[in-house]
Image (cartoon, rainbow, N blue to C red; front, top):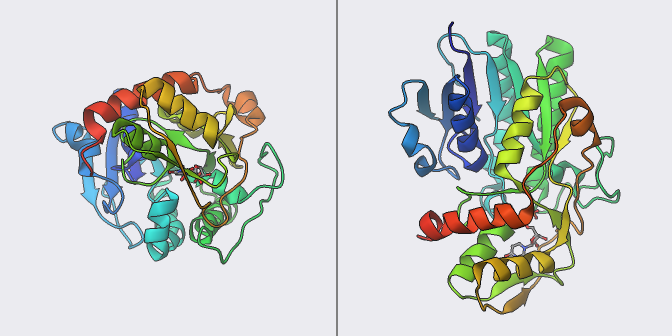
Length: 316
Ligand code: UDP
C-alpha cells in the first residue's frame, strides 16, 4: 500500500521534529519544511538518511509548491517562545498570516487535511480560569506579545474561513506550555532557562513574584494529542495541554530538587503582559479524542534534565 504523505512546516523545530519522528515511526512519508530561524538541523540530523524523509529549507511565508500527493498538512512553523517572537516580531506575524495562507493553499490544492498549531496565547492574560475553548481571550493587540497572539488568532480565523468557504478539512489545536528534549537551550522559556541555570549552578531567574502559574505538558503527550486530532473529524479549536498547574516558584523548586543544584533564586522584572495564570480545560480533548496527558511533571522534568545534561548545554 502506498504510504500516506504528511507535510510538516516547522519540521526542524522542537515540536515539529518530534512529529517527524512519530509520523515516520507510524509508516508515513514526511516532508519537513523549515527556514531554520528558530528550528535547527540538529533536531532532524538523525533522519537525513531515511528514504521516507525529505527536508526543504524554505520560509513558508513565501509561496511554495510540493510535487505529488499530500494527505496531511501540519502547520507548525513559527517562533514560539516569548524571547524568539520578540526578536522576530515581523517574521512571527508573517508566518501566522502569509505562512498559514500558503499552508492552507497547499492543503486545498492537495485535498489534504490541515492541522493548525495554535496556542493558549490566543487567550492572552486570561480572565477565565481554567481556559475553555469557548473563551474569547484577553489580548493586548499592541503589546509586545501581540505579534504572536494576534498572528495565531488570525491563523485560526483564516483556517475556519478556508474550512467554511473552500471546504478544506481543517483542525485547530491550542497548545499549552510544552517541554522536553530538543527545546533550544537559549530560547528563553522557563523550562530550558531554569534547567540550563541549574546545570551551571547559576541563579534561577524568577520573573516577577514567581506566583504566576503555568501547566506543563510533556512533548510525547502533545504528539499523541496531535495525532488523535488529525485522525478525528473535528474542526473547532481544541485545547491540548496538561491541567496540572504550578506556580513558577514551585517549578523552580522542582528543578532544584531533581537537578541537585544549590542555585539561589534571582528575582527579575515580570515581562510586559505576562499571563498571570494558565491552565487548560481539557474536557473536549477527553470527550472527543479520548486523550489526556500521561506524563507527570516530575517524570518529564527528569527526562528533560537528562537530555539537557547530554545534549543541551553547549550554548546553541
Ligand atoms: N519565567 C521566569 N523565568 C525565566 C523564564 C520565564 O520566571 O527565566 C516565567 C515567565 O515570566 C512566565 C513563565 O515563566 O510567567 C513561563 O514563561 P515562558 O517564557 O516559558 O512561556 P509563556 O508561558 O510565558 O509563553
